[in-house]
Image (cartoon, rainbow, N blue to C red; front, side, top):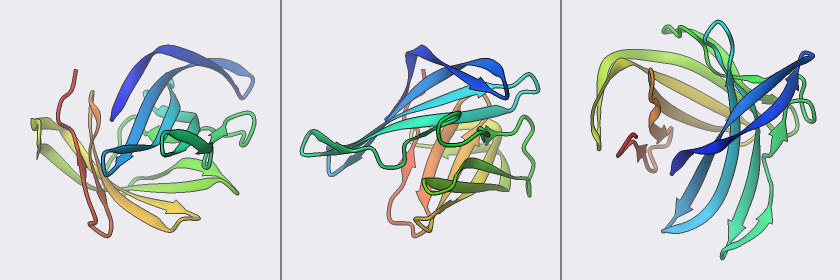
Length: 169
């Protein structure tokens, strides 16, 4: 479950102060909350959306047991990640996260669609399908993004499950 919080967070990037939007992402397994992440994003003047960090709570049996994968621009890395280029085209690549020792994610646009059907109905595009390669975990996913909506579908590379947009407000 992903939702925009009614708060922002201040970062300093290349000497400039940046006010970032905070998105909460909750992950569940067998109906139980296993991770809560607060991701920070900001949009540049050219339209590129940057990922400035994430606070992570790893949860077991309702209790926080760790913070694996947490990172922040200015503390763990100097360069923000690129969440989405302003005008992505098939073949474009970027780095969503580049925090050596914590996480590195390389993204590539593999397909572009005029629309995609999801559980919540048709999402009109352009919609792009992006392959995410995450290390050191060695995990790959296919994610679908629609302009003005964001992520609408995530499919693990091993096809062990799928997450899909049901409702957008």
